[in-house]
Length: 133
Image 1 (cartoon, rainbow, N blue to C red):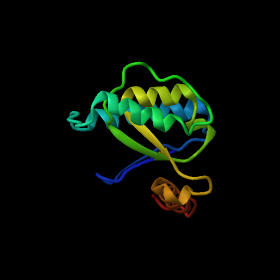
Image 2 (tube, rainbow, N blue to C red):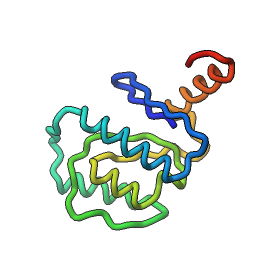
Image 3 (cartoon, rainbow, N blue to C red):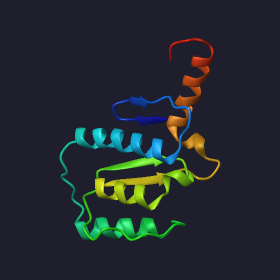
Image 4 (cartoon, rainbow, N blue to C red):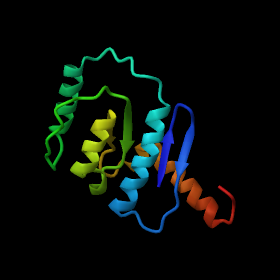
C-alpha cells in the first residue's frame, strides 16, 4: 500500500500480503490522520455552505449512495486514488468527509494517473531484484 504526497515528496509504504478493506481502511485512516494533523491550520475562504455543495455535487456521481453528516468540515486535502470498490464504501467516504478529505478517483484503466502506482512498480521491481528500495 502506498501514499504519495507530492508537495513534500514524501512516500508512505506498507508491505502487506492482502489488502482486504479491514487492512486497507485501518492503514489509510492512520496515515491520513497523521497527514491532516501536519497540515497548516485551516484558513479556507470557502464558506461551509459552499463546502457542503461541493460534497453534494461530488456524491452525485457515486454508484453507492449514502447520506452525508449534517455538519460540513472545511476542505483540507484532495486524495487521488484508484477507482476500486474498497475505496468507495460509505463508511470510509463518511470518515474522509469528516476529516475534510475529498477523494478523486482515477478513471477505470487509468491507474497510470496515480503517481503512487508508478512508485509501487519501482519498489516491487527493486525488491524482486534484491535491492533496497
